[in-house]
Length: 477
Ligand code: TRP
Ligand code: ZN
Image (cartoon, rainbow, N blue to C red; front, side, top):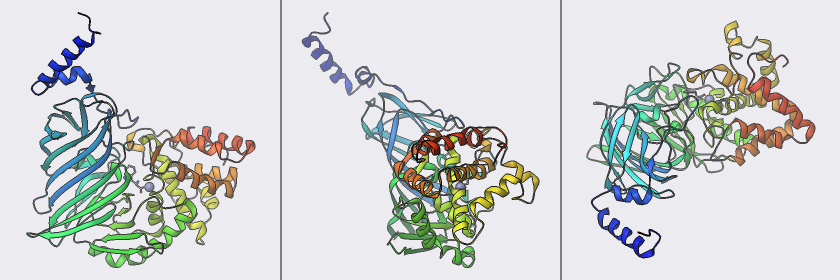
């Protein structure tokens, strides 16, 4: 039989189509898909994320009852296949999945740990946009991350709080939970009347029916899942605007209201300062969430609306708002590039102090290098434990070398190129990689290219070896 003959080919296609309705393997013969990989080879979290597709949008419809701690969820995931797929994975920890459809047809699925493997009735073709709908429910888990911090879904006195860095978001919705796959979001939460449910972006609807209130939040700009959040409780929810008309949405636990007033009033000024230094704000609203949870003592730069565990000081507010540019708009390609987030956010604190009658960044740098910045010797030594661009392991990605020594790297660049070129680099970096992902190499290449001539390029290129990648304390400040 000559397979190239048009008549034979046509016959094969027809019989295949006839079978398609009953035997899904037939479409496989046409598409020839293989399973999508269960991870994206993150050097620190190999199981996070999934290969073979790229999410464009998450539509999450959630219901939560703080009394019973029961969550019901529907996740509508719109994604594009990046290869021919016979199956693909989502990350989801805990919770019961009651059903999954892909393109409206029931799909088979299988769970193993945090991996949820979905086998659509029809294989997916490379380039095809598809919609997967996952129905799930249960009591969401609190995840203890590698450094002992609590994340995931946390129960608070009057509700719940979702925190996702680095692995917590899989506790409350299925998805491609790696920073390299950003997407837009619509997050809708229904809670008992009297409570508020706050999330990222802008509130598009609030309605009460049968003793339950629904809050719908829209995030048009790309968001990594680790900075998605939901805060449920008796919060005071307030909206105002900056002078430029950017909405400021704050949600504050009543116990924190008094203590938070002053610092929250600084948001417009800090935003203006940050835009002046880093360039245009990359999102459609800003604000803060101030909540109480016994086991959480850290802040997180949740997109548009950082979460604070109690009233922050000005430095911490600056840090989390700076992350909106560095971390949330320019997002690391992998968890190895974490210093690009924390180095910049920490340096933003130094710059803000310098610009507001505090210590200069040079003073902070010198004290850190000399080893008399902190009271305790151990704290002063901790910043030299490993190079910022090569954390020892997953437990160390939020250790001092990533923060302080990361900020010292940024300061070294400023010293090498001078203030004019430095601020051009900072703003150009934020602009070039706006709403994208970047890694350390992208950064060092960008800085070298924009250092301002051969001599300056030579100078900055000497920073990387010792300060970014080298073990131990560099010989010279
Ligand atoms: N990114 C947070 C901040 O600096 C800190 C943080 C919270 C964190 N959870 C984390 C860092 C998990 C690394 C891993 O504002
Ligand atoms: Zn930070």
